[in-house]
Length: 255
Image (cartoon, rainbow, N blue to C red; front, side, top):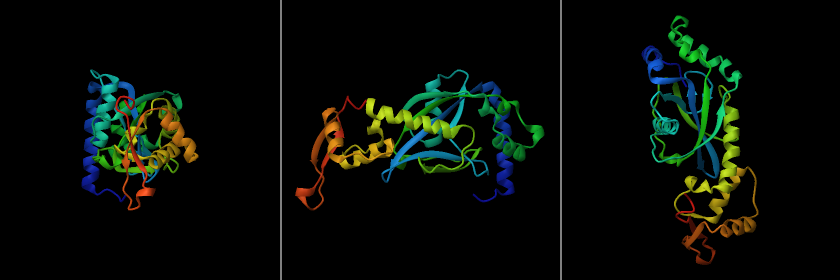
């Protein structure tokens, strides 16, 4: 990202000051939400990240919990604010509360540069415990909006992540591990697929999540044995005898 002009810096400074003044009256102290947003694109599992201010560092989409707000409602609100989407699959999987995470200095120093050390608020200086969720979304429908703390929104391959602040790299690893379990036990994969798909496309998703290859015949046999897929008409390719069948998740089993 390029350097911000004077107007941008002044706007950022004012926005941060306004937030810090209002935060103690609105939000729960010491408690936050971080969400690992997964998408599946071009046979790759992606993670949605935000660049923090003008640093080279990225963070997970997150936010604070209002004093009169239920935890899950806060997570959904924050997710909608970051992506512009509603009705998203969301799963709580971890709570991050190690004391070392509050010793992160990059974010603090960057904000102090913008607003001045004298204006630094105890709000950001306190220890935060973060309740972590993962979300599964259609990455093509995301409509993020620029906010006061972030200068870029970007999808990254889960295996090629940028520099991350706090313990967000650990949170992503734990989210991936949980997704691998849920993909098999809860069959949540339909949230990352189009309504109809080929068996080959579904196998690509499982391979991207599990980080390994599967034998085609074994994979197909296993998935069909679960009785969660409905076979539809063949996908037209111009060669009928080679056209793959389309499938969709059976309503009820995919919820």
